[in-house]
Image (tube, rainbow over all chains, first blue to last red; front, side, top):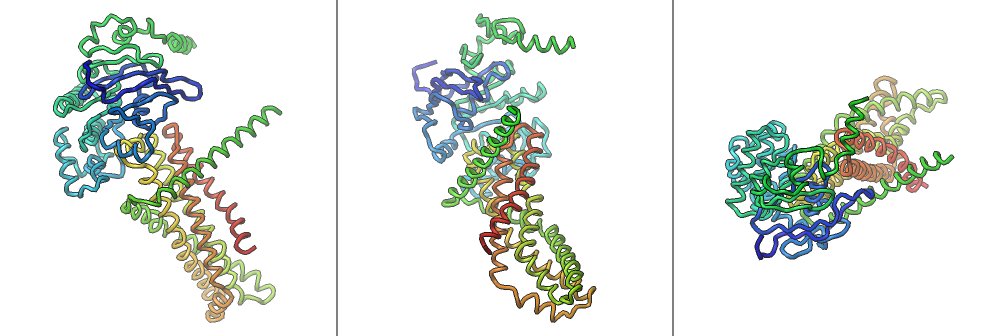
Length: 265
Length: 257
């Protein structure tokens, strides 16, 4: 990383649910124009981390600085105003069922008093970008999973955010559609220089869309490496995760034991 | 004994948490009403859904309630030759009590359930989170229009229900029980005061607030996927209906006490 000030700086972030500590003293810097991916086992708190940054969950302690401003001290109204610079692709796309595809895509613009005509034109332009120019008037229920994800991606970038979050962008998609989504994300990143934070289990996707990869383990950021070193890094925890082994320093023996017991029964 | 105390404690805790949630949703929504954006399109859409689409069920309920009331009152009044009071009983019962309560129960079943199911589904599919990330206040966009719509539409539905119910009573009394139509209508209107009519409308608006707040809060705070949406919907209907019946007594005692 360089000497530039980080776009997002997370300091000492802790979050627990009913005495169950999920995130413990997280420190992470996202540099402007960089794409970072957080990988880690299911239930390690990757989604919780993104939700804390977005203000959807309130952390117990810590700071989230965006361009030096602590977003945790903002009022609800101020936070909402800041969200105009944010884009977020949800795991299930989270399209609004009652709105047409173009209304979904241009939702943020319509809320900013764009005329219907201008918003629709921009929506169709972005839909073309994701290869779906002819579905503007369909309802979300009429879309396949891959199409919904691409519409979600179009909605994420339609209002030209400068920070974009991706929650499992390729989960549930076939390998070809995963590749399409990955390529679109890379194109977006290279084309607009957006700062990105993704979370995923998909190591191929992580290697493809990121500059840096961070391993979240036992509630902490265990290691951050350049994406091209994902398969060569010698860290035992990272190796275990990359090689997909049940045995290793990441403690999953409890689950293994439970599964074994269940199978024996 | 300890089990009983623990269960009572949990029940009380749960009750207090939900009461707090309703109060917080209500105050948060009312606070937002002070300034825009108003999301008028959403408000009109909800008003149509709550008002126009509830009309058939409300009209049918009111018509048959009026008819049954006329029949029952006639049978009783006939025993001491006071059949002419049938119109009065039908109109007073409907306007002061049965109109708002029955419309409230119907709307709670139809609209309260739909609020909870719709918002609950939006919650579990992350659509509410998506609203926030698109710089839109979910309470202002989802709860405020629904609450305003149901509060405004309830009195209108009750006015329609009152007229339909009174007509139902008239039809049975005049065409089936051979009562004099002039006497029936005269007795319907002569003893009725404007206050009787207004009290029904105040009750209706209050029940509208209850239905809106309970339905939206249950949906908005829904957890646990499809099963959670089902639970939220059931809770919304049951709690709304119970609240309507309980608050009806206190409102009546307050207004006519």
